[in-house]
Length: 451
Ligand code: TRP
Image (cartoon, rainbow, N blue to C red; front, top):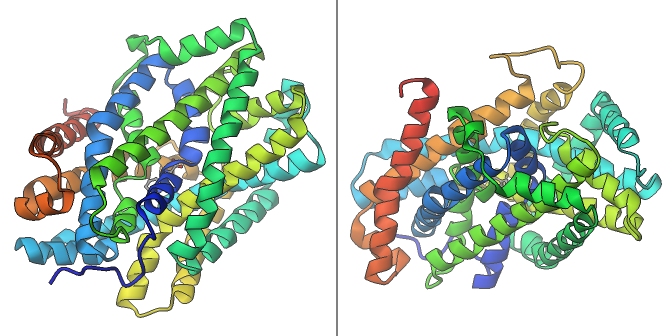
């Protein structure tokens, strides 16, 4: 009794799906998070571990997760119920859907705060322009962090924007927005890379920081961060791509689209790194400056280059939109479940899940100032949520997805859904049954201290 169509609607074409899923993948993870965690973890070697995780773990799990979504055609919780009936497996597998729902809310609560920083920078760009002096730019950032009112205000603006797109449903809200924004963001990144090239020697220092590996910089925690980031940046492990897959019409190749999405996501992250690190070195900044890194570097470029005022505005506007198209996928599993099981309208479902997420987000905003001394496990609320979700929940979720697709589902159903030539299917099977779950398992064991 497999459904042939989702009750929530379908993407209008293969291209629309690729855009939406790329919209989910490309976001703050690429432009804000990738550079700063690369900086904190010593550069090149970290980048190599991250790339290896994308290829050996991320892509096979992306194929698995979207395949499960298309076969189940419902919110992740109900998809797992349906698939488990079909496979004759234990119904309790729907816990995986629940873990995803919770992870989505936790991630969005801090994601929205950071997207709020980017929104605040749109206004700084419009009204002040940016100084060309790195110290002034750092002071501007510190001032924003110190202001609970501004942080909560911008977090609220971003949450309202997100929920008003989600209310309208994935298709009309999302498809059109992404079509225009993604290519423009890409063009702007190229311009920033062009600017980075004008920094002379620093440009080469930046490149060498990013691409020449020094493996002595890497320990178990760095590997966990790189692996967690592979999940985060591709939007895997919590049902986001599963729910997007559930809106995917039959007959479209899941493997091919996954490769495009992962490829585009990786290119954007690398471009961001190439644009940012030369500025770090040219201005004597710290690569390990933390979450403020892009806000303390890119404005320098905008302050210096011709047309920088306009580019600065455009860049932060696009960053906010890239964050928006990601945020939507984080909350969609919750909204779809509320519509399916509680018979809420999309509007009501969006408002309720939005308010819950917003409330948690307020505590994240405050963790940068008034609550900065409130720590658990030596981490602020922001750090804790980031670590818990990106480094633990997403890899554990991804591990379970790999096991489910590789070992629990019936092969004939998987083959039918993926529709791959035999050799390619076999390759994917090895990756999803052994390599991906094995690698995640080993890294987690290492971090717990068992290995
Ligand atoms: N991939 C997005 C980014 O890099 C964030 C994101 C969207 C995400 N959907 C997700 C992360 C699902 C984890 C799970 O900014």
